[in-house]
Image (cartoon, rainbow over all chains, first blue to last red; front, side, top):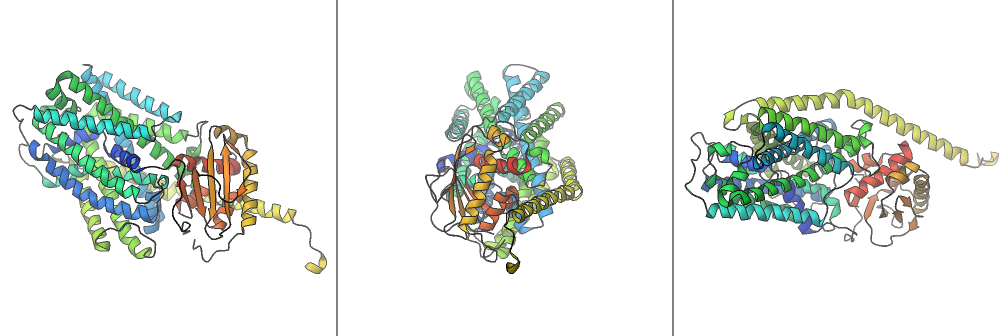
Length: 468
Length: 127
């Protein structure tokens, strides 16, 4: 590998600051689907104690933060997850894991669109069919904005995340202050493991800020931003989980808009509308981060020759058109399936399983690279070294398995089957179709090299016989 | 990709490669159209040749003449072994591939990185 030039990093004209990076990290994790996670969490643990599950999840997330901080410090690049894995394991396997993991982003976009559609329909007293129309309109809007290259950036991202966090905490505090009789808690069968998984779920996605590593001038900004995000997420998620537990009963928690019911209970219709706006704003972050990050990642992988070349087609705004359409279309399809089948609880399980899988993978990558790339500079090191990385792999691997066979409080293999199907399709692509793309890419490069060599030979002055 | 074992390209040859690349980019109507709103000051640095440092300014999709040395505050910094950089400018290597493998590193906004890569795509793949 080529090492960066030694010396202090220079200034960039548009460098990402610590507040900006912290807002990105927080905003990526603070999705509308988190509110459904809170409602599920309250099925395992009583409202007043729900903060403990969020805190326990936060402690494990600090380990994840350390894993990503170490990897990001070694190779600070937007291609991080792809690069780190390819250094630690077989490239084909790395690609299979990466592409399978991308499903989580599609699911979160779909889930957020569904939740907002349902929330708007509830606020306006519309039916399910109208809610689906709202979902379609939202995703069409997100796709259209992305195709035009319009996105949140810099201070706008900071403002949106700030409003989401502040409003959530304010409404949560009001609900706690004005709550009446505490609704019934979990009936029976509360599982601490499942509560822990949901506790971790509230933070998932925060690590995606590592894809902004090239935009910072000081390497410490990204680990610090992740730490700030964990603290902010703990405060906001635990506060609202407690508020929801104190104000919303089991029937309300089974809806797709429990956050609106908690706000309505505390502050009436005005509070409910505030929370509707907050829910919509969380989607701004999710759609912004999800669409931009994933479409650019697909573009980069396609440019690398690992996805079909059609995905590299850019429009006049330099936006990769095909990945954006694929994201919009697949999110809409999934959102409609979720709306029609009411299977949003399964979406939480699948997303949680994929996130636990990627955290287990990050642990394994740190474990391998500590030996394979022992000499590479690490500005941030996971405390505990290889044993700690291995322990993280095992713990998150087990949590991934539990997530994949649990839907709500019931054991179900549906999420596992879904994941196996997705992973199977990705594996088929990587093992069967990808070699053809790679051959074509190699042939084209060889042809260009040959043409350039021929051009140089032709341009060279002929040698005199005595020089031969 | 060990930087120590590979043949280095001299600063003059790298500059020549960059100049030819810039000429080809300016000759590509697709690059100038799609990148027509893009303005970016790029610093290119070879990590193995101390004086191989260049400033490449793109103004509304049109590349200005490359200058030797690093001037101004960059929007984007591209670093790599001189051979990796030269192969990209010659069209002998896929920049996205080199980037994904960590052979070249960048500092700056992802949008700028993507547009710089797109420029290479328009130049060499004619898309």
